[in-house]
Amino acid sequence: VQLQASGGGLVQAGGSLRLSCVARGMILSVFWGEAPAWYRQAPGNQRELVASLSSDGNTNYADSVKGRFTISKNNSKRAVYLQMNNLQPEDTADYYCNFGSLWGRGTQVTVSS
Image (tube, rainbow, N blue to C red; front, top):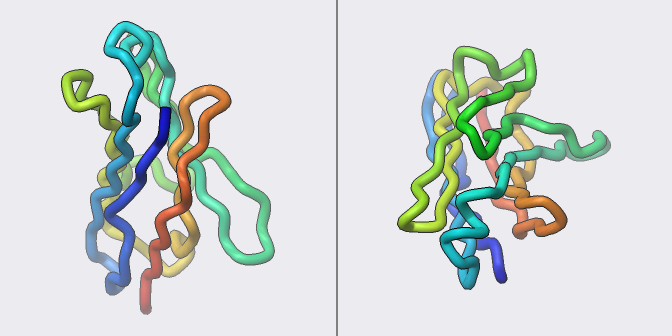
């Protein structure tokens, strides 16, 4: 199974981005039971949890992104998304998708002021 993340880029403060992560090779029954998450790591900082989605649909967000970011998934596409609105310079980081012990490559998000 490979996790392929995309959607990062450069955006001005107040803008939006939508990150996508596709779990290629993961069978539907496994994907259905997974609890995907997005993490981020800014230069010089530790990796931190941004958002997670439990298998029964409960979401959890870091306080810094509540009300601005939304995690969701599409089972048929084996994809998890992170909709990021009202982005701020402090959101600048490499963003990683996670399924249990699986990590995708980071996708870079840069927010200019």
